[in-house]
Figure 1 (cartoon, rainbow, N blue to C red):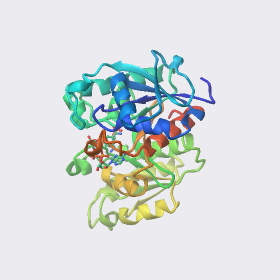
Figure 2 (figure 1 turned 30 degrees about the vertical axis):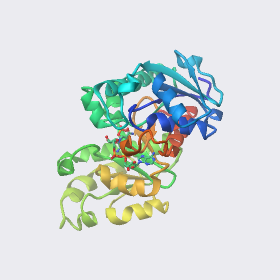
Figure 3 (figure 1 turned 90 degrees about the vertical axis):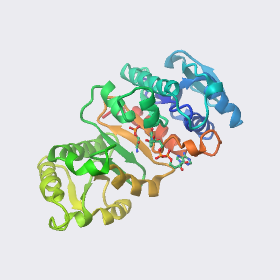
Length: 336
Ligand SMILES: NC(=O)C1=CN([C@@H]2O[C@H](COP(=O)(O)OP(=O)(O)OC[C@H]3O[C@@H](n4cnc5c(N)ncnc54)[C@H](O)[C@@H]3O)[C@@H](O)[C@H]2O)C=CC1
Ligand SMILES: NCC(=O)COP(=O)(O)O
């Protein structure tokens, strides 16, 4: 690899979502080509349409392999993997065909990253609905990529300058969270958080905070047993391994202190516990990244935004940050 300028594969995401237009926006309005060579895996006609309707001066450079990518600004290197029936598609209306195409972009990027023909992958948003329409058994990128890379020990981190949150449970009904928590999966998440903060984010001595599940972190188990029976034992084991971990913290105050810089990362028990405070701060510039994979995968932190897709008003800052993070981590050869 040219360590100075890694090749970054960007999957186009759901064709009827905001993926195509934010790719155009991100590659047009930033100097990403100075730090990496972006290669889009997607659809020729959809990307052509996105360039036209955003009136972008960018030109498509159709290539077959990442090695053929041109490292210059002003172009979008595109590996066309689908030939979508564009005239039959409507913004915000996924079909089995669009679902299969977006999965193909991801599968191909994973293969390329494993073969090191790209040095990191960045994903544009997909929907769980489109995954289902395409017959996939996975909810999202995280589970699909973990499966494809045979990774069992992985976690979802949402990362921004101010706040980094990592989830013990991800896409599960709230009513099942308590049953799905265990000493083992809380410990695994604490470990992977501490490890990744060191390896991927260069924090030599990370301070990891752990959120309680219940109001006031259970308040001596008055409001629930999870802190006493699961979270505290997991933290004790983590401490024995030398991890600087604190908690279980009352979730209502923890994120304020984390955002003030008191902790480098926060382990959260469920999706919205972490993502609500995260998006309050990092809605526009947050990055979703999968920890524990043998490859580097970052993503936008938002979804397909069907309500505004193909209107040219979607923000592309999160994608810019996701590409920058991928490029930096690829340059530092950090993949875990
Ligand atoms: N990385 C990924 O692939 C992600 C996928 N999703 C999926 O996306 C689908 C839709 O999820 P929602 O909960 O509706 O979240 P969403 O992020 O798509 O939209 C929520 C609200 O934020 C707005 N929004 C989102 N991104 C925006 C942007 N870049 N610029 C301006 N406004 C933006 C939307 O217009 C909408 O009003 C779901 O299937 C979800 O699972 C959600 C998050 C991440
Ligand atoms: N809320 C985050 C999200 O839904 C993204 O999931 P994934 O596609 O990164 O697995």
